[in-house]
Image (cartoon, rainbow, N blue to C red; front, top):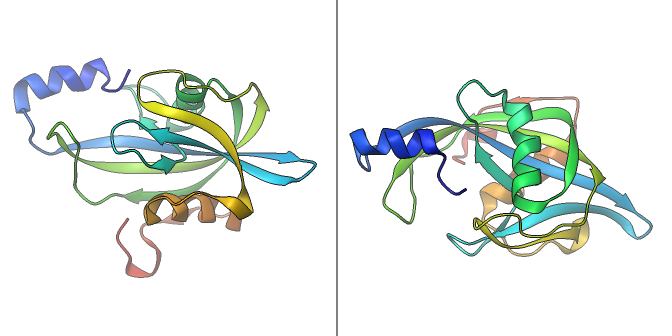
Length: 165
């Protein structure tokens, strides 16, 4: 489901005006005989590869949303290991004209089971990528992966070195 029902209802009242939303990013990792891999999805809205992202539902904990989004979007079960980054995104305009800014919670997750497949209409593909062969992707998504790999015991707060994300 690309737009949660509670946002559809809000949009009836505010149109495309900016909303402040809670988001999550799930950097799912697994070890293989040929080395570590990360789960990525190719987004249908902007045709780019990214970690799984999503919107936290009202009353839902962000870490639970991250694991839920991984299942819904890629049909993979993963366990949250750590919160690695919390930051406010720049204002973005989605392809339908809706504007939003997200308080994004980036989590490092460990693969449990399942083979990636597209689970909803938000993505065109879902697959594992070797960490040394990642596809081209927007810098803000690559940065989330880098942060998740850097030090899973540390949580960064805000943009790195004054960069916008």
